[in-house]
Length: 410
Image (tube, rainbow, N blue to C red; front, side, top):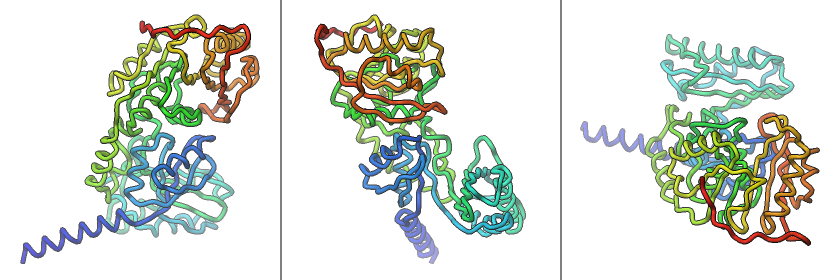
């Protein structure tokens, strides 16, 4: 009888897991402004149809899809799962709506949580007050049902809850990612004004680089662009170096499913056969880049060197270059106009046959590069609105094409 009982329990639990993994729900993928369509395209490659929102995309997915997106997406900052939506015409409506949700299905009174609120024409005028109202409602539900309440943890909570109050509608989400997905886990040291990993991955995707031509970043700082390029070329999942995702602390987390998804994604990692090179005139920045690289399996496929872009010949004949040069809102440059003019002259005289992409927040200074972009996008580097422009460097009159030179690493 006991054997029969335990067999039934096991079958029931497996059946519940199957239902959990096949049930569809609404997911919002947050990203940077200007990368919405790129994220849609990335998800589409995995068979996911998404719709654009402002700095986000919307799609339907199962638990398996949610796990895969968190582990593999290079362009998302986080994935939010919608668990409820209801009308809020008064502040009391929010309290009652939140209290009525079965929070015990998601976490226990012994765990911690945090609530963030975003307002858009709501009855609430202060997001902190709305978040506090929701926190009180959750705590009161636990106290009335179980005699104890969970604690709030601002730093590392077990459950991250997002509420979006737009006019008379409240939508409640659970954050499945936790720490922003741009924090890949490989960057131990960083230089001044580091580039976000998601922005770097987005720039690479927008450039159209397909890992079939050499990649070069001549102002690489702590190495984010070359590392993201190597991760793409090697098919290393974006979450490969991360130790933790918020969904791991959910009550219905399936460790078995998570391990299977990771194993399948990791099995596709391959060697990189094209050169990926980063250089910078700052020895400190290159030391940081090399230290970051040593913590990964990407070390054999990336070369870093100390060199001055304006005084150094190309590391190879042709290729694709992406750079994030200093601009005066971010890092002081003595003469930003002269700097961009010199940048253009170097590209025209030394890099014919190349394709170069440059991101800059100084739109006026970019005019002095003296090249006509064939493509461009508006992106944000932190709070700074930037232009990401692509240039095809054709050989012109009076410009001698440089012969291929072997790369000399310092």
